[in-house]
Image 1 (tube, rainbow, N blue to C red):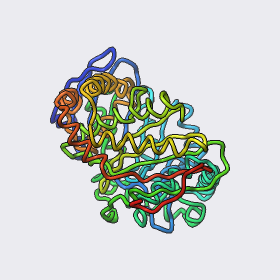
Image 2 (spheres, helix red, strand yellow; image 1 turned 30 degrees about the vertical axis):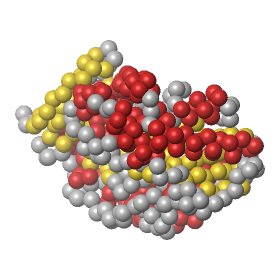
Image 3 (cartoon, rainbow, N blue to C red; image 1 turned 180 degrees about the horizontal axis):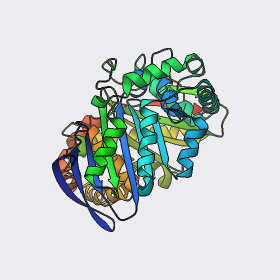
Image 4 (cartoon, one colour; image 1 turned 30 degrees about the horizontal axis):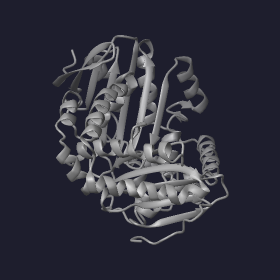
Length: 437
């Protein structure tokens, strides 16, 4: 019998069933977090390698994304057609993607096909072929996507905002690269990236489904056990967001102006993070009751929507938001956004706003746990963020513990530094200005 170390169990409730999180270590020493769920005969795995686009050479931006997009385009003795044919014949879903700091993958399969599904994942990670026809096909798809983005105002605004926020830093580079950098990427570059990044020491795994811990451990060992023991990651320099107070205007003949705005955020491991999370929700985070939605959409009718969100990385964190408005309403929209940021920084939220935000944030979290793939993703994110295996159990109490005084203190800390604003379109009454303006 295979020996398994089950280090912790935590119970939590999800719709229609109860589940427990187990921290399991396989015989070869690979840790994964595991939830058994026999409700339906499915198995889902989420896996994450630290690395992402920050590991791209400066002249080969887009390498991470192209590499992971080609992993399932042929592996081992299977070319691209055969590999995809095997997946389709067994209804196996495999997706691997790259963001700024991570390579993230999802595998979903019927229980009866789990052995073949994990074997295909093993081949993709350990023996990717990077055949020239497959690489050129992915390159052509990447080029077509970049060409579409070059005229899309949302993509232009996003790219310019990050470039202004983190100039001369990997965070400021486009994850998908640019046309010139994508043209330089070779199959050997992709093989080198995979060798450097896809390693066991920077791997996080979540497994959910109709499988027992012992069998899951065997599948994990077969899939990941022969990867290199240690990644060869180049160090990422320290980062501090730049451009606060500045405005960039990119001329584009489009009906509406797209506005991206943001300031410095807060690290995920900061003791004030949960308070900042609540403040962001009240200000502009994802609900129709936010201050920005009310002032921009309901009161003035300037836009259909406006949002803000917290983003965090190893070396920096931001609070970023966006909206789109008619050209002659751009100046007023930006003024309203900046006014609401200043008002929240000065006065904080009200008691009623805080109470409503707590209720919403506690209740809506179950939506992150309503499928096996979402649960697996949550298990991986909890590991990346070092939240502890009992985070789901503690989360509501952490939200309830935030006081009105906490929100007033943290609002000033979070929102008092000014905004970097990028506008794409032909806004009326808005001009570019340097940082500090």
